[in-house]
Length: 422
Ligand code: EPZ
Image 1 (tube, rainbow, N blue to C red):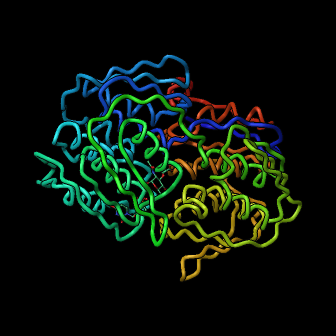
Image 2 (image 1 turned 120 degrees about the horizontal axis):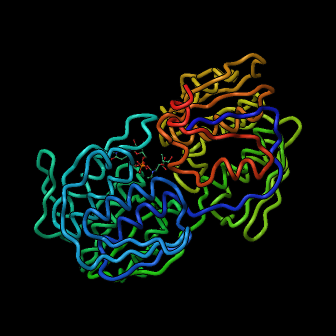
């Protein structure tokens, strides 16, 4: 997609937030471990969901979209088929095939796992869990005749490895213990799904988050996907980037506490209600330091959007402890006029932006893509944002429509249409 953006727009109005991408993807893979029909509502209309559904269908899952945001998935008669590498390389969540396929079929080929490549993304912790449960890792295949209850201690907190640990543990009747796990709302959404499906899972929060899981034969689940805290955070920050006033609706404010504290520190006026939040940008921002870390801290997935806000005001610092090298936003933001210095401890300090800038930029990954469109809205001239890989559509439903409903002026053009007109 190519985004033609008219600059100088303050975003104002209300936007409804959809279901969480990073919650629905592991849940969709978890349906492979159930027998029966699952009904999921609040499913976001994003291409990552379509990608996972095509992987599920290849195993024989029957998937019906009964409403734009409601999926029925029937998983009684499945059989293993090699996952198509062209599809697995499109998304990072294809790593969840490891837990789901080992649990259901006792085997899985490890092919290319894709996703945003803003920095190195190893899978050693996933494989650590696989071995603990009895998986045998061959060159590009993992096999297991039986999964065994075990205790897995993760040396660092990983969303993906925790998800795979949960998927594997859900297939074992005896108690497995997963220690130092990720407790992001999207991970707890998978816990909720597995509990409804028939697992017994208890959570110990201190000294470090631990799941105690007793699994077994799982049945279909009816549930609603939690709201997307990253989408909500992106629209809240859009008000800061463009100097506007935005209300996000259909959110779970408890997931956004760290962001609320941060934007207040920046000087924003914020009103939080039971299911919504309204932000009014300050005329001048106060210098504030953002540190992204595992939940409940500021999420790493908001770091590119936080950077867009800090860069527009030309103040504050940003550090990401989850992906310390996540900096793919710096080059395109600099092209759009942002100024910053990088210090040795990994912090980025933002300085006053330049008035002159490029009139076209290319999107390197999903969250930076969203940040770039917001940044371009705040400029005084028009900008073209080329998203040649359609990253933004992977994670933001109806992105252009939602922005335009807030008063933006963004026109989409497909690459095919552009080629036809050349
Ligand atoms: C998930 O990725 C999300 N993806 C990411 O969102 C998100 O940025 C990330 O969690 C952190 O919150 C999905 O949920 C599909 P990690 P994941 O394992 O699971 C290191 C988006 O834009 N690590 O929690 O891949 C890793 O290098 C995407 O929606 C290992 O060392 O992230 C990182 O430093 C982008 N070995 C840290 O752990 C491993 O085996 C956390 O990564 C796995 C991870």
